[in-house]
Image 1 (tube, rainbow, N blue to C red):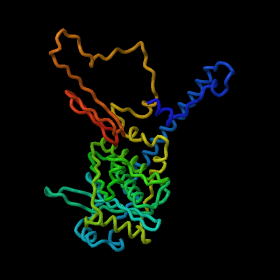
Image 2: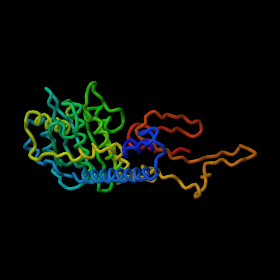
Image 3: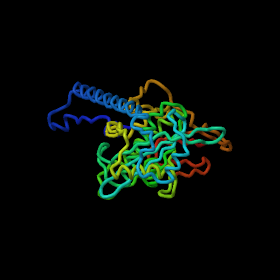
Image 4: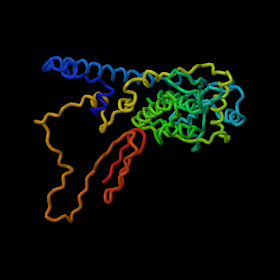
Length: 356
């Protein structure tokens, strides 16, 4: 945690001995003033992060269009899907969001389509909620006019809409994408794709927002899942997002513009740890507590003996201990235990495994 503290939350003040060699010892008063200044800067940085999180959580239906009849050149299957599905503007507990992008001649666009799933007479019924689309540009930071960055931009838009629903309990979000590596890279199931020579940050930013959304969903007893859809195979709602993205590429745009709220959050120095701040757990406290790195009082407390094995003259008795292990974004740990089971972790947000 010390590395996190120094690299992201504060700038470590070099000692006067290093800056002015040969000038004698340093006054501790200066050190305390410098530390106090850093503590204020760290506190302000975390407060800013919290404010950015509150701002992006308020997105909701802002920027979402509801009239599907005005979309140009819809795929026939998408037209049929619109005809068969009803309109629904109420808050729901299950959302399916289809993301897609279009890219050609150094120009790229993105689109999302939102469905609400309800249970009627024991059957799943789907209602069309709305859609959004736009150009892939630098409004979120450096990017490429590529199909990959178009899909990643759509995923960020999907997450921003989902943030607005995360204040409800037990909301399930299903993100459907046809770009396999981009989608599962954002979900943390594999490494994010990187184009050689590219300066784009769009894939990394998609991973950050999805990790934040996953943490928030778990905190509210909800769920977030990524689902791969085969491109151009006739899935009505995937064809819908594809049609909207292509229409936007040809110059048509929805009546209501989608304004990304997440840029300040994504470019905050602590953005990569925002998933911790948005949903602290007993195992992993909020950033202020983590970065404090408080020195324990040696005169208080006692040694934890719960994992100690008592001395016995005979070792015929079996001993067990419960260990909760947490890690993040580490895919290198793969440990086989003969008697304790299997402990493992994979890429993504906080993973916990309990083994006996």
